[in-house]
Each structure stands twice: as structure tokens, then as C-alpha cells.
Image (cartoon, rainbow, N blue to C red; front, side, top):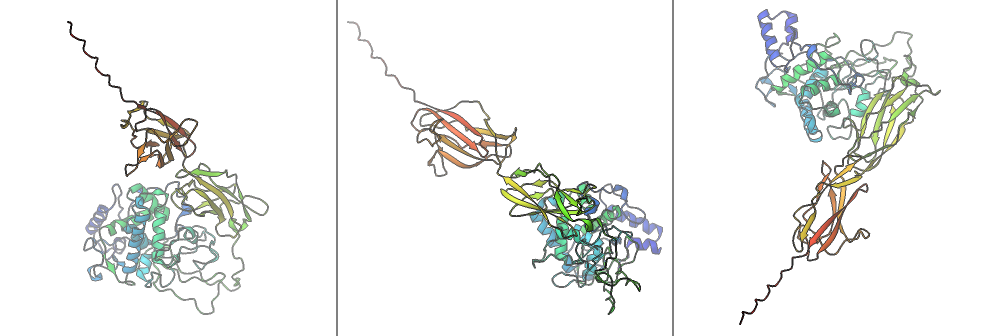
Amino acid sequence: MAAQFGRRLRAGAATTAAAALAVAALSASQAPGVTVDDSGRRTAGEAQSAPDAAPPEESATGNSPYYTDLPPLNTPSPTPTIGTPASRGDSEAGIPATVLDAYQQAAAALQESKPGCNLPWELLAAIGQVESGHARGGRVDSAGTTTSPILGPQLNGDGFANISDTDGGAYDGDSSYDRAVGPMQFIPSTWSWAGRDGNGDGEEDPNNVYDAALAAGHYLCRYGWDLSTESDLNSAILSYNNSQDYLNTVLSWLDYYRKGTHEIPDGTGTLPSDRSDGTSGASPDPSPTPPGTTSPTPTPPASEGGGSQSPSPTPPSGSPSDPTTPTTPSTPTDTVDHLEDAGTATLTAQAGDAFTQKISTRAETADGEAVGKVRIRFTITGDSDATFTGGESVATVLTNDSGVAVAPALKAGEETGDFTVRATVVGRTVSALSYSATVTERVADALTRTSSTAVTCPVGGEFAEQVEVKATYQGEAADDVAATATLVTSDLDPSENDKGPYFKDANGATVRTLTGLKTDANGLLTLPKLYADDTAGTFLLRIETAGGATLTVELTVEAAAETSSPSPSASPSA
């Protein structure tokens, strides 16, 4: 196994000159402006902070511990190659076949669904390495599910975040506190909305590397981040685990994998050995619970992978052994009795626009007292392509000291009609609160011509100028608004005229009503060329938009000039 930089320094096996060369080699692979210290790590001072849109409580992992091992010093060889035999590189540097396939499939799926994110599969690989050592060295079955669950430590506030149970132990086997789960180490409350079915089996399993990799990709691509830019890349990584050292470690592996890697057989990968909480790496094979052993909560499999530790010890003699017996003080979530609306206004927006109103929900006790620091999950339901800011259909928000959680702004899609947003309490079963929202078609309230030139034409000819109008709504350009154009009989008779100017269809036939028109991104609408028949006079073109904006344009067809006969010549004088 190739020795890693951190271990070389600790072991004292490298000379000062060799260490200096190692630092230079690793530093050369860093992003511009980022430096490394004498242990080969990126310095935290150059890392980017997470944006306001991604608060620490939304961390995918609950900020659980992670593996701190750095990449091998040697550049991957061959460079870059996927699918070369394991003999051409150390197992430490290779990626197990099924796990590699999961990373690449997830990145390909995100390229289709969120191309602007520019998610590289190497980023998923870097995070997968740091979180779980690529699912404990690729110990997965043929479907990509880990041979045993990968669990982080109890997030009980003892050196970690304090996150009381949100899933009844369904994912992590712990009904007291949450634990990070699976190859990508999602905490249950995050998985409940970020989970994806990556292998098409109809299930969203955090212990399946295909599901977990796709979920991680969507998580990293929320908020409209473009991961090809350094600032957004750093923000996305920090939102996964809010630690500068975590950012530096992931970026080091990302740089390494971008230079190339190779595929190795499943189950042959090398497990990392160093973790951010100072403990050594876990064994790849969990130790079973001794027969007859009981504990106050469901005993999860032995903790392994990034953010993992040994399972909680069996309680001492005299401790309650009934799993239903409370062993910890109640949390704010436990006191929530119901949800109340906190003054949400009517939710309506035009297609493609942001809703100006936000949903506000208040968590209350049975006595109507506010409950702060409770996670409220907002879920868009119904036949709608509306999303929250960031492109997701689910958002989780922490209540403030007044017990109020304000959902991110809604963004209307192109589908019109009604949909519902449900507010629920994460980790507690209380009645959901439902909010109705409506998306209306795009409208305009005013139409104006962009030219003041008179629109004229001789009989039997064609109009030199095409009619162009601009649609606005509340003074702003109204884009993508439906419109119709009709050559009407008169101001008082909006029926289609049967004579005078006309348009032509694709086959050259006469058309005097155009439907299916839409304004462009600047609210402009340019009508097709107009032609005149042999009827002279003044005619009217009426343009109408969704929302009732109307404009009537006067068209003049001029009669042909009469040709006068020459006067007869006078008779010559006699």
C-alpha cells in the first residue's frame, strides 16, 4: 500500500528533503491561491465559507467525523485511465468497480437534469473517499448495497452535533439520536428529502451506493451552484460538512482523481485509517451483537466508515432495558403539539415568476406556546413543476425563537394551476399543515407599437413594414405572453374581416387571424408580413394578449393612381 503523506511525516520515514519535495508536489495540484502546510494539507485560511443559503444545520452529514487520510504522494499512473488492472496502481489509489460506476452514473444523470451545475464525478469520488473510504473499499453487493450498514457516531452533542432521532431508527437503527448513514454519510433528516433512487429498483436506500451517489449529486447542485467555479465548489463542499479541514481534504482528493485513477475489484480497496475525531479507522467487518445482549435503543450494526465509531456499549446493570423507556430529556421537537399558519398571504404567481409571498409556519405546544429550534419540512405536492429556490421540491427550515419557520421563496414553473405545499415536523408525527398555491398564465396589461411610422400599402401589394409591438406588465417587459392578431371588421365589430389586408400561412393561403403567438424574452412580438388585396381603404388590425392588453393598429391600403388620357392635338390652322 502506498504510504500517505501524513503517515510518512508521523513515522519519520522521510527525510527533510523528501518531505519538502512532497509538499511541493501536492501544492502543485491545489487550486490557485490555496496553499498547503507542512503536513501536506490545504490551509483553512484560503477556504471559502458556506453561503447564507446553506446554514450548518442543513449539513448532509450533520457535520459528523470523516476520514482525514490524504491521497498518495505518487501521481496516478497511467494518467488518466479508468478500467486498468489493479496491478498498475495501489489499491489505496484505485476505486472499486461498482462504486466508481455509481459515481459516474450519478454525474451523468446530473449533467442531464442540471447541466448548469457542472458536477464532476471526481467530486463524488472525493467525498465518497472521505466519508466512507468508497463504501469500505467497495464492500457492496451486485446491486450496489453495502454488505452491512455504514453508520456514524450518535449525534448526541458529546463532541458532535446534538440531533435527536428523526426517523425512529428506520435508517440508523438508533431511536434516541440520529447517525450518519451509508457510503455518503447522510443523516436521516437530510436523506428524507434528498434521497434518490439511483439504481431504478423503486427504493431510496442510503446504504446503496447508486442511490447515495445520486442523492449527493443533487445535494451538491442545489441553490443553483455552478461547481466549475471555485467559490461555488467550495460552498457546496462546505454545505456537505461545515469544516475548513473537510473542504481541504476533499479538494485534495478531487485534485488527485482529476489526474486519473484506476478501477479495482469490489471489496479490495484499502480502508482509510485516520479520522477527524482522532480515532482510528474501523474494521471492514462489523462485530455482531453478542446473543442475548439488550440495549435501551435498537442496536445498530458496528459503526464503520467516515464519521463512524464503535456502537454504544451495553448499559450498565440497573439501566432500563425496555426500548420504550425514555433515557434522555425531551427535546423541543418532543413538545410540538401542532402547527399553525403564521400569517401566510395568498400564494399566487405567474408562470416562470417567483412568488412574492413566502410560507410561514409556527410550531406550538398544546398550550399554544411557541417552540423554537424545531425542523419544519416543506414539501411541494400535486401536479406542478414549481420548486423552492435552488430547484428542489423539499426544503427544511429551523424555527426561530418565535417558533416560526419561513420557507424559501417558491418559483413557479411553466405548468399553470393549483398545487399544495405541506408543512410537517421532522421527527414527530403531528398533523400536516397544507397551503394552496396557484400558478397563472403569463399576462400583459399594456401593448404599444415600437414604431410610429404609418402602415400603408398600395392595393394588390405588400406592406413594407412589419408590425411590431411590446407587451408590458406593471411597467416591466412581459415575456412569453400568449397573443392573437386579427384583422377585424371595425372598432365595434371584432369579427374577422373578409376583405382588405391579410397574412399568409405556410402554404401561401390567405389568413386574417393568427393564434399561438408569444412575446419574446424582451416582451416583443413581431407579426408576419402583411399583404393587400384589391380593396382600398382603411382597415384595423387588433392584437390581444393574455391578461386583456389590447392594441388596434390602423392599416391603409391606397388605391392605384388613375392614369389621365392625353388631350387631343389642336387642328392646324387653315
